[in-house]
Amino acid sequence: MRQTSMRLGRANLDRLPPAIRRPAYDRSRVTPGIVHLGLGAFHRGHQAVVIDDCLAAGATSWGIVGASLRSPDTRDALAPQDHLYTIAVRAAEGTEHRVIGALLDSVVAREKPAALVERMANPATRIASLTVTEKGYCHTPQTGDLDERHPDIVHDLNNFDAPRSAPGFIVAALARRRALGAMPFTVLCCDNLAANGHTVRRIVTQFAALRSKDLGKWIADAVAFPSTMVDRIVPETTDRDRDAVESALGMRDAWPVMTEPFTQWVVEDRFTAGRPDLAAAGVELVTDVKPFELMKLRLLNASHSALAYLGYLSGYETIADTMQDPHFALLAAQVMEEAAVTLTMPAGTDLAAYRASLLKRFANPALHHRTWQIAMDGSQKLPQRLLGAMQDRLARGLPIATHALAVAGWMRYVTGLDEQGRSIDVRDPLAGEFAALAREAGPVAERLAPALLGVAKVFGPLGAEPRLREAVTAALGRLYTVGARQAVATHVSA
Image (cartoon, rainbow, N blue to C red; front, top):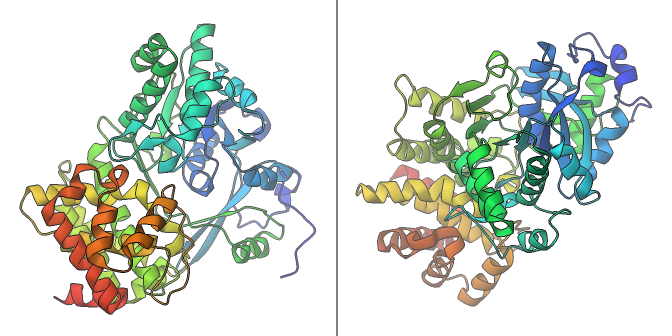
């Protein structure tokens, strides 16, 4: 497609077609109140949209400064367009476009770490929010504790004022605020961690205590870490997506965000230094987010992972493609059904309706969510998405064959070779360890399954549970014998 010469930006907003929504407020009057670590597509398609609504309602002191911890790509794409960007909300019926103005500025942490610490330490910053993915917390997912041997943590302990990690930046900024006598900001985790607020509080205070026990105690006592549940499917943006958005806008947006109509954000209402009126923007404010968090992790995320690994191995590029196979649609439904019995929800929660909505969302043909993208970082995701439900079902004497098949799909995937012997680009912090174990074990389920179940960072003591070992080994054997597509078809038909 031929590119237009015009670039999305503040000066060009009045040239957008009338159907394109744009910021309903004067951006020149907005000041930053939030620093967000992890300036990726999910944040820009979820939390930033809520804040955009808050700004439109008059909460003009809650603009966002975004920080990419490593890559300059997002900053380089958005800075020339005044940090404006488009969200394209895609449904089978069509696509709606909206320009978001909540992001005021962005920084790349690796380039100027001291500047990011200073920005977070500024008393005007009242919330530090995060979407750095599970691996960004430098912790051991099975225990929820800080990984003191993580290279970024080792670096940050020796370079306190020039950190690399999310925990390092949070602690450095809080230490600066404590020294200034300023009120601490709220740490608002928006990642798929079990009990994410409690987990991040533990990680941050453990890191701080390594520097100073007094600092660790002050953070534990003074800083709010509300738990949250976030839900919106946000696939990675492709060049085809950019071209489609350009066609709709009549100008180029270097990094638009693709998403779905559904969005949900549940937040525990505990904030150290105030917050905008999130409820007016559709956020559910609760006293305990755990039931909602487990509902999402064990229903949406678990079935998503099962579809990703087994769908990828079956040759399906996207989740929507995978859901076109009725056997995989049944697989997703079975994962949800078997996980649902492990949940205890507040009165009035309609789990059946929620599960039905998930199946519809997964099948959305306008949303090109790649199985390969969802398959990333499985070592960080399995404990929260699949293993917790398996442990609960085993404790009740219930079968785990469906979840075991999903775990076996992950095992087959992380060997790095697909069913045709082609290389898989495995993106995972432990990819090297998995590849070494796979080479040593070979394509033999009775050797490979116990080897991977022995990786304590992923499975912990659960990996030695005989019933789990038997179920996962049997499922992996079927994958090697008949392939993923046939294994799924046989399982859901049994």
